[in-house]
Amino acid sequence: MRKVRKKSKAFQIFAIILSVLLILITVIAVAELIILNVLPTNLLIPAILILVLICAIGFICINFMNRKTSGKIFSSLFVLILIGALSVGSFYLYRTSNMLTNITTHSGEVKNTVSLIALQSSSAKDLEDLENGSIGYLRTIDNYGTEEFLKDVSKHLGNDEKTAKLSQSTFDVYALEEDEEAEEKEAVFASDYGDLPFEQTDYVSVQALVQALYDGEVDAIVLNETYRGNVEEMEEYADFGNETKVVYETIYYTDKANEALVVSDVTTEPFNILISGNDTYGDVGELSRSDVNMIVTVNPSTGTILLTSIPRDTYVESACDAADGCLTGAMDKITHLGMYGVNASKMTIENFLGIEINYTFRVNFSSVTDIVDALGGIDVYIEEGMAVDTFYADSSLEGVTEGWNHLEGDRALSFARERYAYEDGDNQRVKNQQKVLQAIVDKATSPDIIVNYASLMDAFSGAFETNMSTKEITSLLQYQLQANPDWTFETYQIDVAGDMMYCAALGQEASVSIPDMRTVQIAREKIEAVMNGESSDSVDTEWLETTYPVYNYWGQYDSTMDYRTDTGPVPDDTYTDSNSTYDYGYEQSVVPEESYSEESYLETTDPSQTYTDPGMSQETIESYGT
Image (cartoon, rainbow, N blue to C red):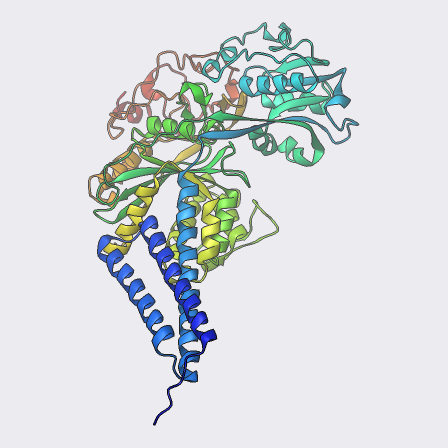
């Protein structure tokens, strides 16, 4: 008679515990898979059935294949491996879901930092040390931020809390008051904040304000941190960060509306995305200049992606909502619009190109370095003659050589920022930015992503903000998994020419890039072509070779203008004669005569002669019409 082996009671309890854990982890994995919603239905249902089947197999093994010692060992190890694998899978699904929530859910509030800055040599260490001293601030620029600072200081020193005199919707009140007698007027906030223990002086431009600090006219200056980059770009203040110190700081938050122009189905309908890259590290939600302004036109039906870049210093007419705080209609570098929020950049670009932008993605320097490092680096191809020994953006890093280069985060960022090392400057920089974006997409959609998945999810979580919804992003992921389209990348960029012009955000002249409106027209036509299901390469560009550049200094864009045959009208009040100055239609500093080259501008008020070339004859100019 055979002896029946009794099951170990201890093993039975162990098997029950493992069974419960297996079922629980399977339920969690299925729930996370459904919540994430990245798999199309034809893949989701089989995936759930496979998970249930795996759970059933593990349950049977641990409970019914354990009579022998070897069976107990095998079934236990098998179930433990299943629990571990399902736990890791559930964790990755949760991380992905959490990442999507982080980038698509934001309060709409933007962090603003206003600093009280003194020279390093100053004995002042805090606000109290500056009592009975003098401070300077900007007269017509960033009035809202200056008043927020003064209100905070007043409260900090125990004075009665002030009621805001300005709102962002009246940002341009003081901008319209500047005149020849302004220098003799009382500082703009002196009467309302006269109880503060500082002598107050205001200045018309950022440069004048900073120079007053260096010359000892004031003990400290009030400066919004979004302007720090502008200061350090000026050669004489390149070491501003090391030569000064922050003795007090005010942080406040503003609401920045940025509504998406939603399309009904992102997997079938074309749409435009604005990628706005801030020139800061750390919090992507903090306002700063936009170093990158790129329109990504996506047509899922044709599998075409067009990257259209606008050089950083392109001189454009500002457009924004009242709450954004910029001066609508003012001429400025497009990079300065980023200081008022991504909505201001979006509206300005829409006005400039004559297009509609559906969604926005905002990133910063940290985004690039973190994502590229999380991907394990990216590979970019450098054409002949485009090698760089070292980057001016970061001289401590190795440059790039001709052929393929593997770039880690810091080098990828420096490569995308570099302009001084290239003869073509800003134009080459936007090409480099397009290369980096394409390389990131290529790496992120390759099988290599599995190895660095966890770190990539961490990098994505804090890397950017978007007004595209989680549902829309998951729909695109579903489309990618199901259709697996072979995306075709196409690129274009606006051509520009350098000049010195007045910039509203600075209150003074600065180096800018004047856009050639012929290339703006082509950019618009290429975007329209992709939106209509065609390739951007179908757009005719040969006419550029038989026409002269049309540089726009004044805005007032007309998207119906055809620059193949018409240079467009020059506003009546724009130019008078060769010795006059440019009139922008609002009060501002005068652009000096020497900004305009005698070789480039003929001595006439005839609009047809506004755009000239040193070698152009009168007959040639007139042949292109007015």
